[in-house]
Amino acid sequence: MSGPAPALQIHGAQLEVHGLAKSFGGARVVDDLSFTVEAGGFLTLLGPSGSGKTTTLRMIAGFEEPTAGEIVVAGEPITHRPPYRRNIGVVFQQYALFPHLTVYQNVAYPLEMRRVGRAEMRERVERALGLVRLTGFETRYPKQLSGGQQQRVALARAIVFEPPLLLMDEPLGALDKRLRELMQVEVRHLQRQLGITTVSVTHDQVEALLMSDVIAVLDGGRLQQLGPPLAVYRRPANQFVADFIGESNLLEGRLDTGDGGALFTSVKGLPVRVAAPAGAPGPSHLVVRPEYLRVGVAAEACANRYDAEVLELLYVGDLVKYRLLVDERDELTAKTLAPSAAQPWRVGERLAVGWDPQDCLTVNP
Image (cartoon, rainbow, N blue to C red; front, side):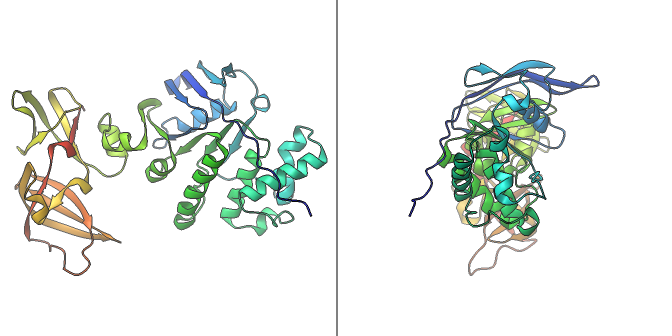
């Protein structure tokens, strides 16, 4: 009796993108984009529709020719190589499975194109299907599979030829919310297990924060911020990133600095002490995440403390969101765990709200 097939032999390669640009009809959709993904790393291109993230992925894959810039994999320039000579695995949003081929035939297709021998082909397909937990599904057709199973087949096909680089274009976009959440964790575990360098495209901020080692936030074809998920979330580089990643309270106003430290004053006159402001003195926006606001007794010790009126409350599963009128001036949203026994504050009630200087920052407009 034969033992289990050995693991796939994937060696992730470093990806470098230097000054990448792409224009269509005179309109520049990707503009001077540069980043590096370390071997075995997971980078997500995150941004709204039209930000240039899919075009960037297609240039790396070889489906689009860059207007300018260079793409380097494992030290080798591949900018002008055709897709079939790049040895890159790609997973599309709609999976692009062949409906007339079985699961085995779909996964084996890249190996057939590379003229891999029949015995080695069977071994590699078995390994890939085992990794995505589809052993026993070899003879089924795509129409006989669930959305999650089809996604796994597409992933197995993308890794079966042991590429050093995997590209994924909204790979979980066609799945329902629950299955999408499960597959986010599953794909991340598999990527770490294989050590394959991965670049993924998404507009889903939670997906990017959960799956990535590094996030590249794009808007208007330009890189807005590049960094680990926690840094991008906690220290957004500008107003766009602060507004796009997660939920933020954004107040327009002015930042002043002096011997007494940094003080932000909103347009409506709300004074806020800020620690180590990221923006320069002058017109600024204050950023404070809803979960950093403390309410009730918890707010008493905060350096920034105010009186507030509850304007609205919303239940969000295990959380409660409060829309508050703070100091009779600005509206802010606070997010707290839903109380297990006591009722939350009601609309019209007054309570203390506050946060510490290190829990907020300012960014330039």
